Image (tube, rainbow, N blue to C red; front, side, top):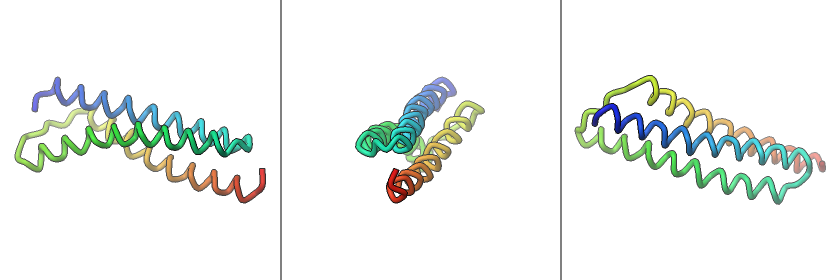
Amino acid sequence: MNNENLDMIGFQIISNVGTARSLVMEALAAAKDGDFVSAEEKLEESNQYFVEGHKVHAQLIQKEAAGEKVEFSLLFMHAEDQLMSAETITLLVKEMIEMYKRSGI
């Protein structure tokens, strides 16, 4: 796989998971305001973007597992970092939303 293709994959991951992370933060803001319906909708929409970013990443892993050489770059490392941080933030925000629900805001 050449660097140009890897860069494009990196940008696809960054774009999708960046949108997912933004939507998760919007969900948290909605929950903070007591709008749990909107919060759930934002979480669902966020998940769609996260899944798309994860699919692109998984395809790359499958190529490497099949023996295709994958070169690493700073851009791709950043994309993986964004993927992992979006997943972590999502898990934390879901817990925070549950806490808001229980507190009766």
